[in-house]
Length: 409
Ligand SMILES: C[S@@+](CC[C@H](N)C(=O)[O-])C[C@H]1O[C@@H](n2cnc3c(N)ncnc32)[C@H](O)[C@@H]1O
Image (cartoon, rainbow, N blue to C red):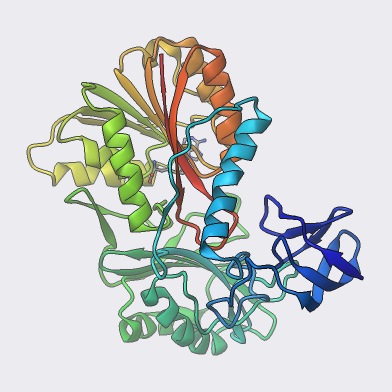
């Protein structure tokens, strides 16, 4: 079937009349596609869009890690900006002030979740399939992660049965890779015996195992050669396995700058969904910060790191499930400023409590423009004025986007 692509949809697919979703296409493309339901697969490009450029990576077009390498830089940036305008438009925000997109550099992504299948392939799933694309290059991930994939494939070949699947979660800490191998069941004896030599050979900081059969699987450390750490401001935080980190250091720095300016002048701050303290640690020299987080290991890491920060006395932490027990107005009212950085689902209940409180200075960070827009609507209906929105692209060539804005009243 011959189709013209009219625009790029929310997930990064080109869209033709129907609607027909055509991955790896761009508005202005005149294409021959093979149609399967609502999906089209490009068979031939009759006339390429002026926005089409050569992709950077040989895996592009099959690997599900990137959706938009084939789009020119300006057009790509416009599309990401437009995503914010569209999502906020759906919630009745017609006149937002959007700052220029801050884009993280190539080769800077420090978190990855890969899949291995039988030691044959280590990489991301193929677009629209469970097939794993064996990755030998990636322009987006940090080189330390890309270099590790080859040796990991060789190691797993000797460990996994032909069809056995394993997820590999990787964080790049300041002192090396921090890895969790995830599979169903216990690691077998061979793997337990061989893992230390493998970690030594690749100079990996730590390798853990997570048994996905368990209800609440917490990682078991198989080998820890050194405790992985990162620096927030100039302070070291030692990461528990599977810690949350902003996807790039460049993105983290931009968000931190924005947050620091937003809370300037506040004495007491509460950092809600604080993780290991990305924002908390950057602020505790100048403000008293109360960090609230659901994961007790991350909270403990933050607390322990603060003991090593010498004179810093103005940090308190609290482990709390904020979906089940959001902070209530009388608790929120003790603070001069609130930082909130929820997971992708947003923070509907917590935002409602903030709306009912006397909080007048809030900064909201979000990795999901749709839930950000929903929560922003609640805040603005409660009298807050939304400030400039800064979009931060830590997820290069994917449809994901981080945004941050202030809310004042
Ligand atoms: C987007 S991360 C932000 C972390 C931190 N602000 C940072 O920038 O590193 C969201 C955090 O929310 C935490 N979280 C997820 N669900 C939660 C819940 N129900 N209650 C409390 N914290 C939760 C996660 O553990 C994670 O640390």
